[in-house]
Image (cartoon, rainbow, N blue to C red; front, side):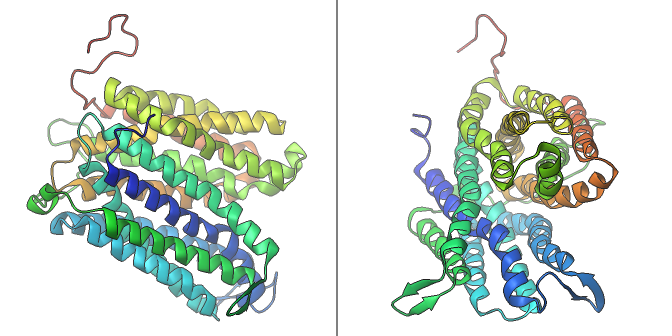
Length: 427
C-alpha cells in the first residue's frame, strides 16, 4: 500500500489537515448564504463598503476573497519566522487555534464588519499553519521520500477540501437541529462542525507531532528567496516554481464563477456542475501519491514538464466542449496535470531548501497557489463577458508560459535519476 512506509508524523499532519480542510471548505457554501439571509439587511439587495454603495454580491465576494489574500500574503512572513525560530509545531498549533476560534465565533457575528474581522483572523491562522505544516512535512522526509510525503499530504488535504462543501450543504438542508442545549440552526451546526474540525486537528498535532531535532538546531541564517539564480543568468528555480504554480492555480480557479454560463451552454443543472467541479479534485486524489512516489524514483522535472504540457490543451478544451461528459473528461485531465505538477514542485523546492529554510522556500509555492485560486474567479468573471472561450484561453496561455519557464529555468534535483524512457533503468 502506498501509505505504508510514510512517516507516522507525516500521516498525522496529513490527517489533521484533511479534517481542518473539511471545516474551512464549509465556508465556501455556508458564508454566502449566511451573509445573504442573516447578516445583510436586504437579501439580494445592496450595501455599503468603505462608504461606497455596492451590490450585495460584491460584499459577499469581498468577504470570501479576504481570507485568501490575507492568507497568501501572510505565508512568506510566517514561513520565514518559523525558519528563524525553528518551531514548526508551535506555528501550526497557533494557526489551528485561530482557525477554530474564528469558525465558532461566526455563530455570534451580527454585522458585516464582524464577518470581515473573523475572515481576517482565519486568514492569519491559515498563514501561520500552512507554511509551517508544509515545511515540517519536508523536514520529515529524506531525498528518497519527499515526493511521496507531499503526495500523501496533498491527497488527504484535497479529500477534506472536496467533501467539506458537500457536508455543509447537507447540514444547511436538514437544519435546524434539536440538541440537549436547545434547537440550533443549520448555520450554527456548520460553524460548530468547522470549529470541531480545527479542535480535532489541534489535538492530533499536539499529541503526535514534534519538531525534528535538526529544525530547532539549524534555524536558517540565509532566508532570502531571490528572483534570479546567483549561479547563472537565469531565474531562481524556487521563484520560477512559484510563478508556475500561480499560473496553474489561476487555471483551477477559473471554473468557480462560470456556473450560469455553463448551465446555458451545456444545458445542465447544478448537479452536473458539481461533478465537473469535483473532477479536478478526484483526479488529484487518485494520482497525487503515485506521482509523488514516482518523482522520488525518476526525478521531479519530467513530471513538471509533462504536467504543464498536459495542462495547456486540457484548459483550452474546456472553452470548446459542448456536452457535460466532454467537460468532465477535460476537467479530469486537468486534474491529472495538476497532480503531475504540485507534489513534484513542492518536493523540488524542498530539495533545494537547506536545513532551516523550508518555511521560507515552500511558502513561495503555497502562497502562489492560494493567490492563484483567489485571482482565477475574478479573472474568469471579467473575461467571460467577451465570450465563453476567453477564460479558458487565458488559462491555457498562462499554462504555456508556465511550461516555458519550467522547461528553461528548472533543473533536476534528484541525483542518479532514472530515465522514464530508458530500456535498462538503473537501480
